[in-house]
Image (cartoon, rainbow, N blue to C red; front, side, top):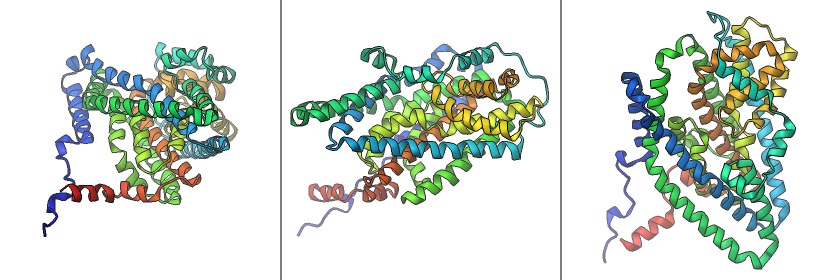
Length: 440
């Protein structure tokens, strides 16, 4: 009797072929180029590598959200489920966002990173422009902006909330068609598979994008640009790590998975975000991975896009920490009432600037304007290092949205725990092994 070949199990790829290894090497090489040869690293063609990769990804975000959301809703028989999942997601977002804001506030009061800040507040026209943008932000404008002037315009601008609104409405319409919508549902599913195929092609350029973005950042600002502000960056990174390990770790444990294994599972996406400083650059790939992790398609399609506007944990930590840092650096004492105001204001402003260039800085300006207008000029203190802090914000945001999707799936009773266990523990699917044995 013929024996099953010992090599029937799939072989691991060599390290140099793994995407996260390629991206990590590209980040290191880009950093070295920016440090050793800034005149080359700041060349417009080097910058174009990072910008071009982000544009390629953003090109695909609107269609993949449309296909995923419409397909997820259209396959649901009960319309009440969509509303139930949405409410659960929003409740989760607000609770966890509050934890993020409070942790930032506590750490800022304990560590006081701005207490020994030396030097005058620098003048910055760029910071003034962000403050002006923040002053023009109103809650009613944010709500009205969710409604696109036209469907084509929503897709052309790539506004996530506008595309999400139309996708939800279209999904309900297809669901209402019943059997008549079967062909349309299949077509949308096929289009989604095609778009994920395009994403797989685009992701091959991730190392180039990460190299260009990191080289330009270091070349433009330089390690020396951090100066006395290195303490704030260190405190922010440590606070973010504390939030991920303690808060998200506790939530993950309740839902039945390990936060460190989850981070290892999405390491490719995290490294892409690290290289590009944009959490949107990993959105499509994250959605696909969460489905493979055992989350239902409908939950992934609703929670992930919504989370990019309503679940910005990293941005929340940044706002409370940066606001108190500026106050401490300018010698302004904020009483308990003012600090509680920061929590309330930041909870709202973090939603209003979603999808806007420099969103983290704009939300900071909006928060300072409400808490104490005298603090607005102090934005110039942190403006020079905002680029370095935006990377950490993006990393925490994408991790938080990934955990949120798994938790809402678990809460909804639609999390495949067997898939989750296999994926996080890197256990091959037994059906795949069986196929390998049979064909071997």
